[in-house]
Each structure stands twice: as structure tokens, then as C-alpha cells.
Length: 213
Image 1 (cartoon, rainbow, N blue to C red):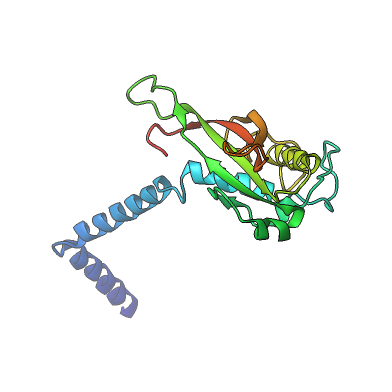
Image 2: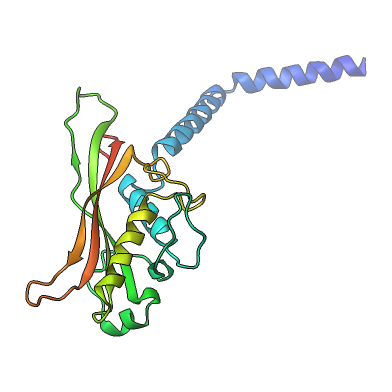
């Protein structure tokens, strides 16, 4: 009898709760909010595609170290410019910093104006884009051109090498379709005919959301 009475009380409590105004609505709203929060979390990127690309460039360039093991391609880095902090949009450096820097050079990454194709249809979810990126190594003014060319070679190899495996990777770890060199050489100031830096221009081809930057 006690067991029957207990079961009856439980059933009665559930029935009363379900009949209480707002109970079902509250449960429905909570479930809906939970779904919205989950959906919004998926839609919100942790950072922009542009920043992810710049960060991956910096991570790869930071691996330039003449003491490192040869890459899978057999190439061995010839300088130590990756041992210094790889920076973004540093447009110049002073001679004291460059003289004391590892390899007497400091790398900076410049992301530039990105071009993108028009959407095929108004509701297209992705468009092809190309982000020009320049990797520039500022060096100590008295550094011989033969050493500066090593900076160019090291940067060229680092960007297309997976920093974790040492294998060739033209996709920046899956961030793009492929990355390619557009130009390379010395940066010469217009006022004096001296080499200020070495630089490589890259085109990062990728597919992005039409409204992603």
C-alpha cells in the first residue's frame, strides 16, 4: 500500500507541474536558447582568416635556424634570422637592434590588399581570393649581399615547409589552396643605392566566406 501511495504522489506532482502556466514554455525556451548558443558558437570564428594566415607565416619563419636538422627536401637553413621574434608590419629597424640580432636580420610579415572573385550567385557560401603577403628581412647595413641572399633562400623554404614535420606543404596547414612566390629580391631605398632589406612577395590563394576579412 505504501508503494502504491508513493507512486500516486509522484504521478500527481508531475501532472501538477506540467499543468502549471509557463512550465512548458520555460522548458521550450531553455531548449531553444541552448540550440541557439550552440549554433552561434559554431558561427563565431576565433580569429579572421587573414590573421590565421599571418600567424602561420610567422610560425614557419620562426623555424629558420642554421643548427636545425635538414628539411625533408634536403635543404638546410643557412641563417638564424628565425631566432628573433618574427613581427608584423614593422617598416624599419635601427642598426643597433640589427647588429645584435641573430643572423643580423629581423623578419616582418606584411599582409596586403586582398583580391577576390565575384560571387557566382547571391547566396554563394565561398569565393576564390588571393591575399598578397610580403616577408621582409631587415638586416645590418654592413652585411654582405651573399649573406642577405641566404635570408631570401631561408624565407622561401620556411613558408612552404610544415614546421612540425619538415615536409613540403603549400597549403599553410590547410588554410589555403596553395601559396606561391610572386617576386623576390632586395629592397633598395630611393635616396641611396644601398640594400635595406631582402623581401619575398607571396600570393596566398584560398576560398573564403564572401564577407570574411
